[in-house]
Image (cartoon, rainbow, N blue to C red; front, side):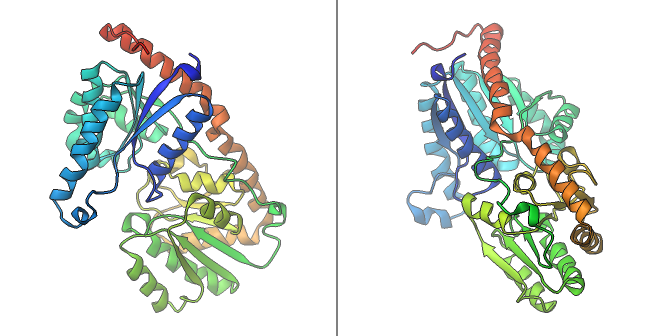
Length: 375
């Protein structure tokens, strides 16, 4: 299959807000277009029209869902294949499930690229419904072995399609070799300000770090409803002057933050395959992360990162200080991290994705007697 012959529809969220799945949808569209493919997008998080509808719960979902379904039906008739970015919960029921059924009705191959967190909890309650719909899908593609195992346990086999890291944006700074040789320690956390991401644990850990390393500074990039609570926590610990809440950053600003920091911490209590961890590795800075969810599937303790228990500020602080004081450890983690993240470069994923697209169109033809749509 030649990329120039492919007409693909991407269904998923787009920035803003610049979340992990939204960034991946936008990035994939740009990469496919750069290869010559014709790409259309149906956005699941389009702005509400009129804007005042967004303040009315219950009604606002209808104002987003009806235009979504109309556009999805119309545009799906103009493509060869649908690539669906799927999530859990209401997002699955409102947006992913209708896309699968529309593809089935229109006899178009669809790749369900599930990327949502909380898959185990979601499937423990909804596996039967999800399986019923997934029988109409062509392929289930998952970004990690963690999700592959979960879906397999619930009777839905899939295959791995890793996330893509943009190395033209996320790369080491020019003076990366000199990092760690100064007395400063700039730490970044790039997760939204929500309880599942464990920011309170990280702030408490930073208090301990600062007691040992007075020059340490903490930068927290993200937004969320815990913002005031976390700001108050930093005040109560008397470290508010040392903690910077940057708010939401666009991808280029995020890349600059990584390059200006010496360490990245991922303090999550629940996680899947955090892109922020891979972006930090690609930026040439060491990572301390909790050992939760899919994290051990992408990071190896003492080799590409230091892994710690969740909700343990003492362990988090000790791991960060180990990296600060042990230059050999720091260098090993950075070197191995840069090597590991090569797996997520577009150059290493492109051909696998093209094969997946091509086999999906052939598989649909074989199973359902469907012919590829003519131009």
